[in-house]
Image (cartoon, rainbow, N blue to C red; front, side, top):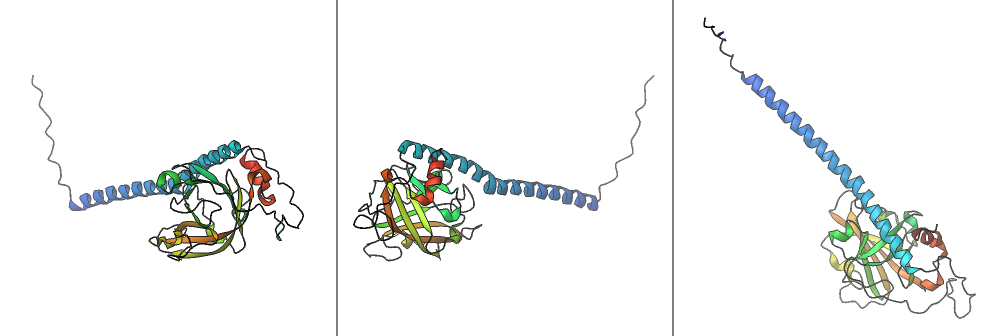
Amino acid sequence: MVLQEKVRPPAAPVSGVVILRRAVQIIGELLITAGIVLLLFVAWQLWWTNVASDARQGEVVKNFARELAAPVTPAPVPSPGGSAAASGTADYGAPAVARAPGHGGTIGIMYIPRFGENYTRPIVEGTSPDVLDTLGLGHYGSTAMPGAVGNFAVAGHRQTHGAVLDNIHTLVPGDKIYVQTKDGYYVYVFRNNRIVMPSNADVLLPVPSQPGARPTERFLTMTSCNPRFGSQERIIAYSVLDHWQPVSAGPPPEIAAQVARARGEG
């Protein structure tokens, strides 16, 4: 006996409303997925890059500090009268100025008490992404080195990759910025900041924003993006060298605890 197939009735045509509904549903799901991906990207930018960079920069700082094997206790300041400055700091003569290392080499460590008692960041040669996105503050190779007459200029991120200059806008005139190198400690005093366009490279001149001028002072210029969550402009912070002391004299008392912690002794 042959079985007869059950004949199915023809399918009802899909209406335009149903098609539209399905399309809206698919678009909605795609938008939700895109939103999640965007949130994950923002989290990666503002959180994970900072975590990863902080860890890497901490290693660079510790390795540099340990290689110095320098004293971490401040030396007594001589009594005024010939060898001491009127400010109470010893006069060690003209600052020592080192040659710049190769790309990615560590120049020193920067301490900025205004940014917190744990602010300890490496200064590395170069301003390309491989330096700024991982290693910390990058030194503009065309500018002077710490302690030299002229303009020692560095760059750093503000909100990502360690956010090394996130609080640059909080500096006030008179704040001290300490730079430690293999030769010694350079104490700069903050003067002022200004906002410029990214194309304004005059801030890197030997005398900032004065083309052709011959420098007589020792400047420190820090550059970062502005506003904090954008990059349409650049914020520039200017400081000038107040004094220096050789590494054999130990660190300035104000940052002695930070220096000890940087070497893993605090």
